[in-house]
Image (tube, rainbow, N blue to C red; front, side):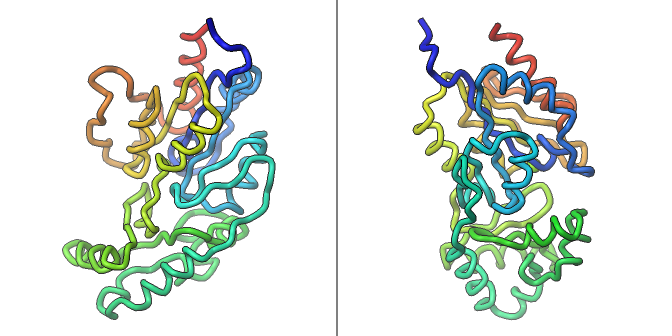
Length: 261
Ligand SMILES: [Mg+2]
């Protein structure tokens, strides 16, 4: 017997290259699936490398403001039903650690904090107002490694010695104190106790989340090499959606809803 008061499905979804088109950042192809989830009383948790100010706006456009959101790759969480922005002690500590590196390493990493608003807009393809929101960080620092590939490991090791972890996302090398999307997902899942969790993502920074879901859906991103095989793929718990971005998201979620009814 199922408990009718229980949250039936809780979705944890990456944004860029998953619910948002990799190039246009459009999510509207996924609207039919989002509408069906809302009608069924299911929850959708945006889980992204984006900042709180970026997510607040998108979450509102998608009608998901009552749900919490995972921001800055799991380094922080935004409460549901509130648009209050978090404090930023982690960010200040990461910037200080970067600036304490030897110049030979520091000079080869260009973080968002080193860029002007127009430079962030150019690097990300975001509009200028969106780039401004992307620079308003609380927990982590994304950037571009401009040095030789073989020097990157030294840069990462020097930061690791200060407790900072560097991870490659779809587009950027992001520095944080190591909490992942899956850590934040575990906390939210424990609190909301859904009957089923579904995780969707396209990049290495989504792997833990994809493996933690009752169902994990790898959304194809034609702009990147495919993810290495994940645990759960052999048993079918994790599967690959052949269509990219929000078109694939829409198809995969509608299939799960169809299979349940
Ligand atoms: Mg992505």
